[in-house]
Length: 105
Image (cartoon, rainbow, N blue to C red; front, side, top):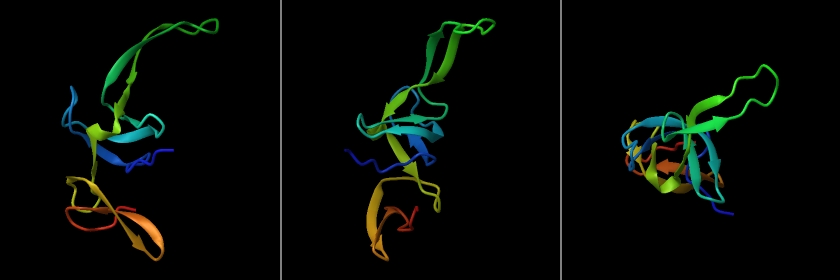
């Protein structure tokens, strides 16, 4: 199983593609395919059929997946997009901002 450097709920910025520069929160991750869903980025249109009586069908806009290499984590302390480093604190592996050196967990 692949390990991602970002988690659900992290604030990230999109660094490439049609939504370059957009910031958002990670809604879900898929480590097997190395993809994440970012709030407000890569909006796609899906066509939905009405399943129950009285339920409307139609076109729904929702977020699509983005490859994890196209997003950068925003540091909670310095507020800059950064790569993620790792270090051990009290025997636990924690994520560290490479710009300011502060822990992100």
